[in-house]
Length: 439
Image 1: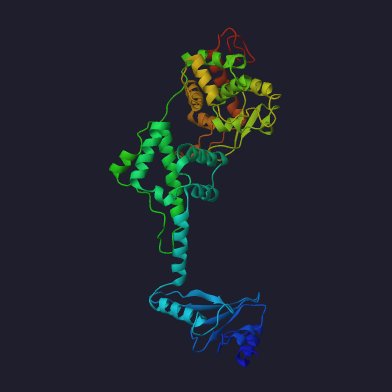
Image 2: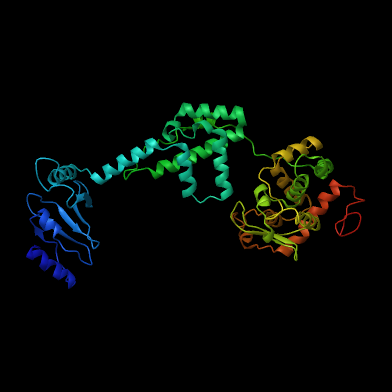
């Protein structure tokens, strides 16, 4: 039978009376089970011998036994769940609500927040079991990464830390072990690959450390141990920014090798030729070209859109006549887009061997930019052609610049003319104009 004082309190709540306070009653299991379900949450408080205990009745009907009190030295009360009504006897010689209540009150009196302690234990257990593979999955799912970037991170770890993927992340964050891993990867895959692997590992470790930090900032994942100027200098491989490009004098040999791909390359030589030539003539990044889809190409106005860009800003560019020629001959060769390929390493190696010209895919982009600069196009134009961010410098005017597709058409055509003039004999270069390559 519900106590009269509880009945009066609930009536006051139903009338929405201000100042209605939770009543104090003597707790028994029968009384707690008899507390009625209401369309609102409410609480009743216990008298001795369970003073400090609260029974919280949810509108769902769930009844929990809790403590709501400030830890010593704190200005904010905390709510600690003791259990659900009926889970344990309220009192008695064995396990009981009263004994749990005494422990919680003792902790609070000593300035200990049991919730924080419980959370710290849980986070510690999670951190001790967390593997590099699991941490990488969590990092990728929680951070806004382009699909291509996420896949690149996975490939980096799988290729260079294959044996460590199922190791505990916290175990890998040992200074000497990291030096050994850096040295091993450098010997196997080179300094750039080693640095890239350690950067991914560091990002994953820092994110995991932050995710598993408790309320006081402590985390079971140790901090990145490579600290101090001397250690940092010793750890990271010295690398210079890559500056490779195809000098105009070598364009004829390079182009001749790409033209030989359809007949001599063991693979899809036509795809290889068209892809390499298109990247050189457009200045696109490797994945920007491979992500190009047919619906992104406008054959009426001779332009294309790139959505998967490094700076996440969409890009629409004009096509030169020769670029359109490449796209049109690709039209019947692939379903989703003109350049359906995953990895161009083999075709690049073949062209290097055939032409004697050393280059990587990104060198084609640097070549495009260098050719554009040699033709005296302005910095704004070149940035727009290769989708380098405008508006990040101190030049206020740059932030207002918006170059249209048609404004960029002539520069794109001029760059193609320049490349073809260098790559072929001028007497045979035709881009919709005279034999000398002019328009």
